[in-house]
Length: 297
Image (cartoon, rainbow, N blue to C red; front, top):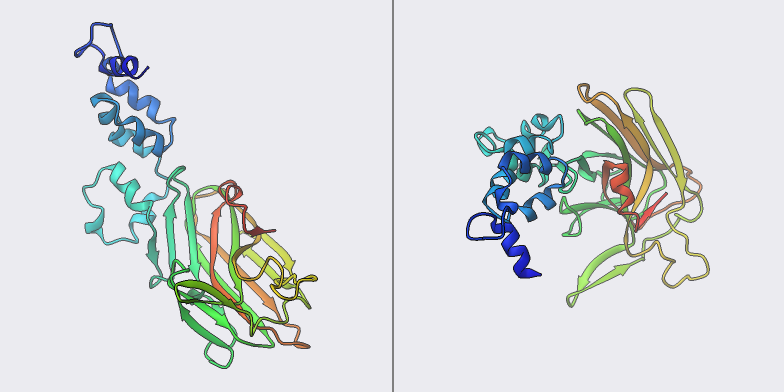
């Protein structure tokens, strides 16, 4: 089997078995590659010279880049991308591109080339964030932004944010990444402290999003479902969970879409605390479906 495949890839160079993959014109290979994903293209590039050449073709990678890829490049210093091939541009944009003082990031999904975004808690308006009796900024490697906002205790809980960007036409899901309980490392092991965790099972948190073209989504969710297990506090404690707020549709990639989002629990009849706020994600919805583990609707 291996020998047959080797002969097939050699083609007329060194094989007497007739035409093989090595005899396919590079232009034809490039046409086929436009229907494949970037990982598939990179794997096939190892077969022979024609496949390698087609896998580096600008005409192939132009089809993998989103329509607004220049907007992403404009967030980088020009010397980072000038005179690069489309393949190299795709590689650069598949890594997080920071903007707004590094508190927001945008990148391309490596498999599909679709645009994803993350917004740090640092870029949000958090009620009481200046008062260390209520909130603290905690450095951590568990956040892509290396810092999270930790709530000790507060009565009026409200977090608001906004982002304006030219997103490609698609259906997007917005979600908050939250963690109930404060985590740390002790003797090399991750441990969680629930000393301040309270109040999230009494009334639900209200999540909301709205867009500049009038779309809206609203949902409510209790962040702590302790149930009968008061020791570990149920399955929502001690792990990062992405709470889905809703979806919105972008139809015109030429116009910047403004997305406003918030979460609040402003019933002042009780206090709440022990919550880590990391970030907000905006990701194409069907990509999100592949990451359903840990996502709550």
